[in-house]
Structures are given as C-alpha cells and as structure tokens.
Image 1 (cartoon, helix red, strand yellow):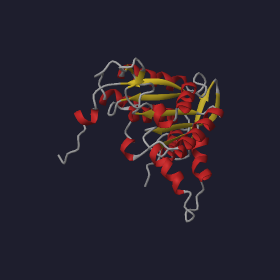
Image 2 (image 1 turned 45 degrees about the horizontal axis):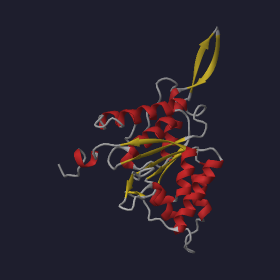
Image 3 (image 1 turned 30 degrees about the vertical axis):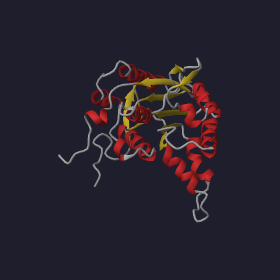
Image 4 (image 1 turned 180 degrees about the vertical axis):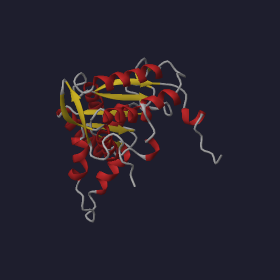
Length: 250
C-alpha cells in the first residue's frame, strides 16, 4: 500500500493561514504526484531515468573545458524557461560519450519538475515507427505517431542524423522540425555530427569538408533551420563510456 502523506493525510489539500485568513492549499504530495505522472508519460528510457543536471556534474568531471560551460548553459536554460527562452531550444553537438543525452534528459527532467510536459524520442526509433505505420496491418497512422511529437511542449530528439540519409528521411525530418518551428515549441536535440565541419584545402586550392556534418545527414536546409530553432552547444572530451562505464559482470 502507498504511504499516506503525513502532511495532508491523503486529502491532497492542507489548510494554511495567512494574514489572519484560513484557506485550502494544494499539498506538496499532490504536486509531486503530478510531476511523477508527467515523467512517466515523457517516455524517458530506463537507462536514462537517473540522468539529472546534478548527476551530470558528478559523472562527467570537467575533463574538457567545454563540458563545464555546457552544464552552465543547461542550468541557465532551465532557469529561463519558458518566458525568456520563448520557444528556442538547444542543439547539443559533440563526440560520443561526453554526456549529450544525459544533459538533454537532465534538462527535460528539470523542466518537468517546473511543471512543463515533455517527450523523449530516439531519432532512429521514431523513424522506424513512422515507417512501420505504412504497413497495412498496423492500425496506427503516420499522423497519429507524429502528433505527440508535433504537440509536445518540450521534445528531446536524441541522436539526430544517426539514420542513413535518404529523401524520405530528409522529408520526415523537415516535417517534424518545420512543424515545431512554426508552432514555436521547444526542441532539445543531441547529435554526434558536427554542426559545421572543419575546412581543409586540397591540392587544387579548393576548400572541402574533412568529415561528415549534420547537414550531410539531415540536409543543409534543415541544418540551417536549426540555427533559428536552437542555441548550439558544443561538447568535446574523452569518451566517458570507454573510460569509466565499460560493461562488465563485476
């Protein structure tokens, strides 16, 4: 059986007195219950349920000068939401294992604690669900799958660009990002691909990109759109999973 709140004894309300007047006020237990319900509905994978801004600071020591500022930017974003952010999101870029997903989920959890509603989606899983909707045996339509993604107050889209780029992928990404952009909804994105690749000069004197960029994966037009939707936060450092969190039976 669930424990009965010692403050309100399960009523969900408590009587408070202010300026000589008594009135009923919502108990903290009911506020916490609503926050827990919003967290469950956010679809955060079990692997990332522990991810908070506080645990990021503990698990990802400042091994590189970009990680500390990234955490400060995340905290400032939470403090400023929603009035100062006004629909602007974050694009967390950087090498693997530096905690981009941890930071994104930490932001989402902090915003939910403030009363926001949100949704977590892995980019590849979302595309697979949309593709599966084309199967005539599946009852859910493409719009039914995408509607929660369009409507989420805060959307975390993890691993953007991880799926093999095709015209269909580009069209689907454009549909999602443009809809959220037009509705001024907050989108927090993580990607392993650099926003802009370093330029190298070939033997013919022409400048070329050395490595694949986010624009290569989702289309340069959508990469440019992200500059309007999100503040870019670059994160670089050692792969934490290789250094500390390697799998073992111990």
